[in-house]
Length: 193
Image 1 (cartoon, rainbow, N blue to C red):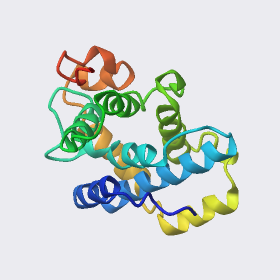
Image 2 (cartoon, one colour):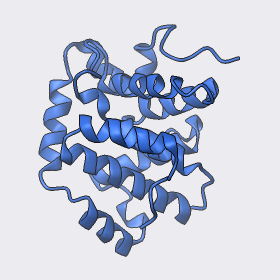
Image 3 (cartoon, rainbow, N blue to C red):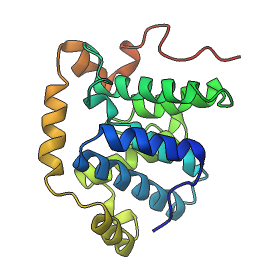
Image 4 (tube, rainbow, N blue to C red):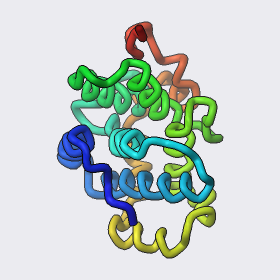
């Protein structure tokens, strides 16, 4: 198993997320990161590990207070939390931030959105592997066992589905899972230079 990225951003993100997520959802986030790395390397996909790590950590943060946004799908709260975190680092390019936000916003769709970039496709593929078992044979099975041993599932499926159901506060919060662009107002993404 690879080590997580050893950057200031990665360490700060881990601190925030580890304190906000339950153990099961945190373990899911870590499995998504490692599945994404394994899938990306196996398929020879070029990506930045730190970016995959950040979106993996933040992608379900919108299930939890204070990151929930009433009337919006949970992934919008997640991507806004990532945006706000990255904006503090004045070195992060708004275009990069928007791409990472899109990876989170579109991760709940039925098919991976490779058109949104490699990190978006990897996040979605890896999340589907972990939640649905989809394409889970496309990564090294010994690595998968190590990942599951380090970040066990326990009662993840039950907890994840309860979080998902609780996030449904109105029609927008449900339809926005599949059509996030319908829930974005003009302030959601950053203005790019």
